[in-house]
Length: 95
Figure (cartoon, rainbow, N blue to C red):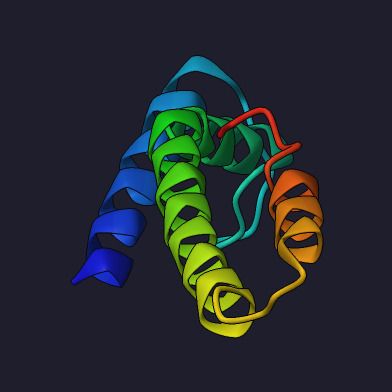
């Protein structure tokens, strides 16, 4: 389905570009400008979803990391070791 949609958009962009310009491209061969514009238009909307995904994954990793720290160092008498490890893992600005 996505491939078909991509092809339809690609074909329409090619037809619009060809109507504005004179081209000697072979059938089924699209100009670099059309491909570049289509890819740029598609990828320009990726920033926000990618950022949300990265932040979500980071939160999951932090929760898992904190659980591992608690599991391995809560019963340990060396509270300073647990504090040091917790401090090192919380240096990241997203905490």
